[in-house]
Length: 345
Image (cartoon, rainbow, N blue to C red; front, side):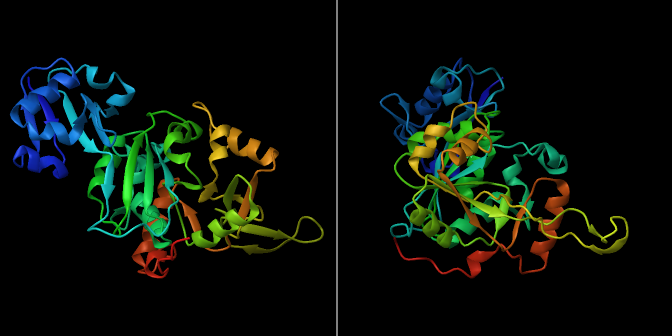
């Protein structure tokens, strides 16, 4: 049985338009690619350099990036699929320099175990709202405030995230790099694996399952002004239940409030961080616990309070609510139709 090597649309000019190439016999990924290069030598220089993969090319076997297996020596069996995907995708058409230089890291590795109706075959970040993956909505929120460089920290079914990034309809000038951070890596570990790309200065960090009308430009200004290592956006979600009002006697019910806002603030994502935050993460850390707690203990964490809309797609019910809001024609997080592109700086 042959091995199938899948070629993305961007590279098909080098293969005469072929999207799938059959290789009759190969023991490793490197052997399979050599067989493809024998048929289409122009492809070699597009994806390799000095005998190794170019930095911004990912190759997947059985849904896993070979960089986290044995590289080009990763074994392939008869019937296997080898998928080539550029790790960087650009927005439509060419554009000038980005309005903001800060990269945005988005945690996209989750399986969405509480969204089983949607995520049995796709990563949580690709569950759709209004016919578009929720990740697309998050990218649009940041792009509306001038952010143009995105790092997608992938995990479960990361090749599907990379394929989405390679063809997504996004604003001009948007660049996306997909980083395979491992299938079961915790959130702090995913950030740790992207340390090289995030160590150059201030960076944004958020989750692929939360949408809001948060003023990211104001939040970034707040972060720069206070000088601490990190800023987290704080939100007060609405309760899932109606709340009873109890009288002075402690037992009489005087009324009900339908799903009020919580009194306490919670982590809503949409963080801004300085490179020293990377000193707090480790391969096995859960970012929301150890790293954030230690940053708070060191006096290096501030909160930006957001009073507007915020919601997180954590359950099937949440997905229904967000799709219903989109269907109204004016979902509150669609800020990309209202926020003018900021000037650099």
